[in-house]
Every structure is written in C-alpha cells, then in structure tokens.
Image 1 (cartoon, rainbow, N blue to C red):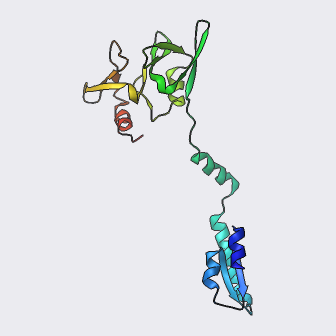
Image 2 (image 1 turned 180 degrees about the vertical axis):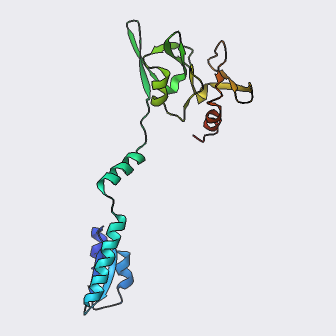
Length: 191
C-alpha cells in the first residue's frame, strides 16, 4: 500500500487504519495524519479527524488573502525598452543602453552611452515608476541616472554629492539633499 501511495503522490492528508503497528513510521512518511490500530476506537478517530481539521485551518488561506499574497510575491515589471520618435523615424532603445534621463526646456530626454540624445514621451515622475530601481535612481528634479553612468562622485556639502556622468554633462548634476540618503543606500545595493 505504501509503494502505491509513493507512486501516485497523494498531496492530501491520510489517516491510516490497520491491525499492524509496524507500519506507523512509514505511514507518516507518505502524508499520514494519523495511524489508528484496529479495532478503531471512536475517540481516537475523532481525535485524528480533529487534528486533520485543525491542520486544514492552519494551512488554508481564504481567497482574498491568497490574492493579496500572490500580488505581493509578484516581481514588478519594469520597462525594458523605449520607443523613440524623432522626425519621421521610430527607434527602440533598451534601458541598458540609456545612461540617464534628464529634463530640459520643458522636455524630457534619454541620453545613451553612445552619446546620442533622444526625446521621450514621459516626464521624469512617470519614468521613475517605469524604471528598475536597482539600475536607475532619481538624484534630483532634473536627472534619473543609471548606475553604469556614474564615473566619479565628490562630496559637495554635508548632504549633497556631485556626480560626474558618462557621457559627460556640461554641469555635473548634484544629488539633492532630500535624496542623498536614498542615493547612498542605492549605491550600496540596499534599496
């Protein structure tokens, strides 16, 4: 009987009833919740059933809580590429090719590691939600930078950091004092 249970892999709890006590250990190895010797006493059967019901309550989750748990376990989906329009042309650029995003003259742009600049349709607030926070960080109101774009950093003041990027920026951006602590955590891989 145990070979059959192992072969079909029953995922439900089983209460074994037998006249032999030598199989008790084996019974618990194959989903056994109880092991009753014949003649079966009503009280022992009730205890085994009560134990099974108790375990069922412990391990069951109501559908609403189950959905909340499943949503929490889902890995967020981050944007992997952007469709860029310039003139009559359309191009896709992978996020791995983007060094940083910046705002300038009421527009938002992506700067690639190949030193090309493209307009993007989203503002920095929207981009911040779309991008993988392990790879990109918003350092101030004008820049979201890729970890790979950082070439050098210098202490600018007690709470601010000057970041030199590649490709180079005329005026290297400063990490705002409000974002400085988060920036340091991001650099350390703690976000």
